[in-house]
Length: 591
Image 1 (cartoon, rainbow, N blue to C red):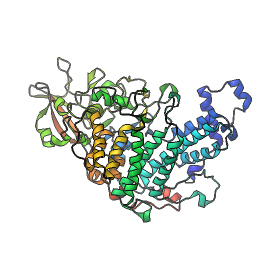
Image 2 (cartoon, rainbow, N blue to C red):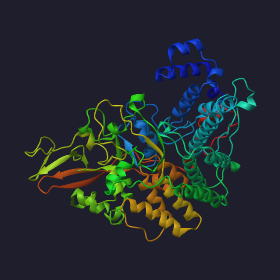
Image 3 (cartoon, rainbow, N blue to C red):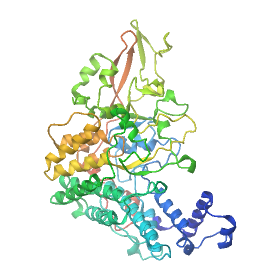
């Protein structure tokens, strides 16, 4: 951990100066009278609320709420968690998000886009907390900023513990010249890390404000603290229920802890649902349009969003999610980037029939009208998936590899009415289904990185699911069923008559698809091995019959190899580098 704490504070404050100058928050003459241009002393930072907020903005930026590291242009890392969870893939076989899901995890460590080891940022959070307490700034401002930084630190510990299990809990800013015993700390247990997160959120629900003004959008409220508490406690409960203790308690929980943590998650979820501030998004009567706009509507009317990472193109904060996702023929740059596997069979038909009620034998044995096969599925499917004929930007998406006309197979040319005998190659090469969720139909092809759609970190839909699962663990089956059905009703789905683990898990995978939950959920439920090991995900290829206006479908392998998920993979490896660096580290089992 020694490398992670060697940060030069002088360079940091110079960077902060640049940030503030670019933001235009200082008058030049006045500022030049205060300090030399080449340095701002550490003391000045903590005396100036603008510099304190600039420091804090840097901390927020390095949390990485959404994975966009390593490829600022293509941004294929958006697909990392979904790919690991078997939902889908990015287009390129060389993309790290694809190779990571099909490679065997070893003691060499994990792919950088899957990794999360934020001890530098945690060190800077600790330093902030120590220095701000000495600041002469107004007391309420200090209290607010302390609560925000504690939230960021707790969130980073959560993202770390779900990957590696027990990790060191460090709450003081380590110094580079500190004794080795202070630098090379051993791992705390997984239980201790979760308890630390829950202890922090127990304070933060009282310390953070209930609401913010628009100018402070993106900061965590008390309800975000409750949401983190709800999520973290549910993870702990399910790991206690389904997992086992290892490494003398370093990993796992006693089975008896499941009810304790389920109770914490249950109470946190109830607090949010009963607060009167947040409510399910129901602005549109059409359930498809409603679910699509849930992720795009950034107005005050969208009460479902509990916390989001804010993007603003004019402030050099943007991404390329929509332009990378949309079908390639609607875009002048690289698109058709993210594809969905046979995971989509989890989506039911609109009348409540299982998605698998059309068997794979039936799927390939006849021609299909897409309105019957996909157009009458769960509204969340139609809002989240591009399939043949999906409406988009005044046209329709196409995926067919060929057209059969008058008994002849055609792969080039166009019919008299403009029908292309073959869709653009990039749309035909992977799975025949692409990610539509969170795509903004108003986006233009240029500039590429100009999407300023906020990324939702916590939303009420997840809290309904957390409550249903926690209630089920506690034996409140009627409440679990009622809660789950309330969420289904928003999508105009018929209510479930009974509640089971499988019903809860399926509903969660459907509602939260492509929102960076699947892989972590499958691991905490200890079902990932059954879902992923030895599996080679499938996709669809289409041939269009021009005479019948229907599609013939074949199944295709969407991955080059079968996956491997071993029992040890319920925890990621720390990696030989970290273990070699810290003599007190013990690697996770069987790596």
